Image 1 (cartoon, helix red, strand yellow):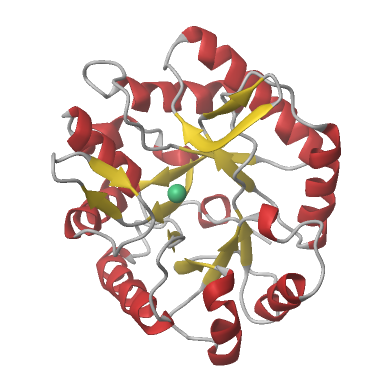
Image 2: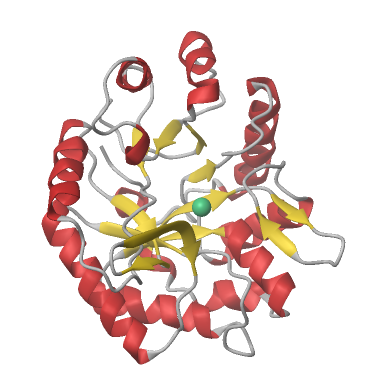
Length: 289
Ligand SMILES: [Fe+2]
């Protein structure tokens, strides 16, 4: 498929992949994969991905580049990733604005970074390096965090804006992460959205989170999307604009039909915003293939 992807997509996870390529649900406009699950392997994984590609545009969202980590990238990984993205004809690849390890230790978690000048310099240099090595633009995604950051919580939005300005990179806005952080650290998620440079945003992510007994919200990707997060998506579509929206579900995957119900709920929120006056710069807005 050659058109840029628009609309609503679903994370292409192996637990639902077979059923998805059999049924080819029309609710879904695109799928997104973690390259780490498909690179350097043969058999069922690349086979299912190939089948998905026959029918859906595919986006790629990495888990290992961690733009706030001080360790240098592995050359071999970047080389293999570039080849993989070339094969899939990916124009923009995304990964996270986080810390993931140091001194050769990879923590397998997306940990927060301080929103200060030292981090800004490191992240800028790493995004530039990744973009050059992969030969394509990068989008970076905001993460959820559980350690206190700047007291008003909005420093993150300003940090994101600064990184976008310094690197020219694109922003993948995770609406659930904004909401989770705003509740845990008591800031206004709408004000956060207002501080994000809308022209840099290329995609939204939406996922579920859990509320612990003590009230702390944990980004799990293991439950349905919360009503408040759907409501914040509606606000984001108004303030930032219409962009492709991906439903991420990584843990406790329910039957595909349940995920499709959530996809339909997202479509219902998106529909009133699909006024041609609001879709500006669609070529830039979408991740093209
Ligand atoms: Fe996300």
